[in-house]
Length: 482
Image (cartoon, rainbow, N blue to C red):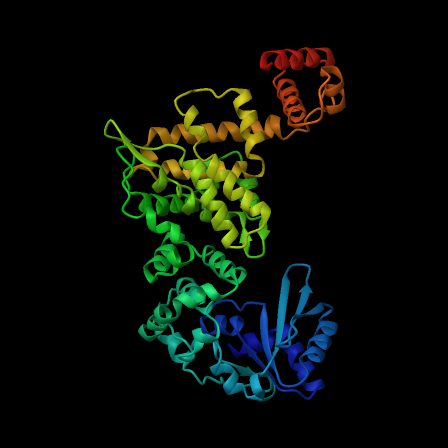
């Protein structure tokens, strides 16, 4: 462990800055936690500083040829960003609380994050002399998550989500007193900024075995606190076509979504490499497409409880996709998600039943494929994976399910059409909006856009190729609707 610290150029440079400024500096945070877990050290470092933090951060950024900025002016938190050819590093500098390192560590979230190493001890004495006022080293050995103090959640309730994240990520257990503190302070979580709640929640969705994380959050009462709509999913039967009740089906859909994302080549052999990169796209800070799709998978049937009906002893959920779209719009708003992210959620929810209309056919028409991508836009691939996972989650034998296999074949056909036809630059419309208004003697409005779409569809399908044919098409359409 000492050798790793001594060989780190980033830590050595921090020590150099501390000596030049005659300031004590301590290593804390995730990199130190990694070392005690015997895993490769994280190059995103956290240092506690006595003295002028801004000056230290500025000097460090110059030495490392990086850039620095203020994270929190009130608390004097600064970040240095270093763009190496192969890696991206963030180095954070914070002041020591009241100038007392022990007091600072006691005020942190969990014992395993409340350990510090003095840089002078490392580089001058060549010794590991951990400052561990809350028993973090013992908790590493016992593999438990424990708060550093009984007021840890009072200072910051988002730490409740962090407790679950660390427990799941490290495969640790949350000790009993900390569990009691979670239950006592849980409702105060809703008083925190939703941007921070969202960030922690989506970090949890980045940990393997997402259904287990969701079940843990549910059992602790945290998930229904954030998304009370899920309570109506529980103990709701879905009829003869489903092997699972709705809540279990939702978790199974999350499971199969994760399975597909991890084994893309098995499900979409021709497009696996492209889709792997596609789902790694960052839509917002801490939210990649793959995280968002797991979120959508959990909530895709959220409209079913309000639409359940029985006819001829058969269970139906008519228009649950439309109802679910409105509910998920509200949930996205609560989580302070951006417009693009919200649009993907609502579009995938609205159209997650789309392919079921074609599952009994051996061939889907070019017009239907065109309209699929036209209507779903930026949510097309997300929805295709969701549809496949949703179908797998209906049966206890998903790999032997003929409907699942037919849906997956349709999804592959759609992707093939997208890359072979749809993704190619569409031809310029044979008629402009102004020309349409002049030809038909109509005023600007929604109708113009509909007619342009009609022309573009006909062009893609090869039904028209000339301006004259386009005029004939829109004239005929207009007469038919008058």
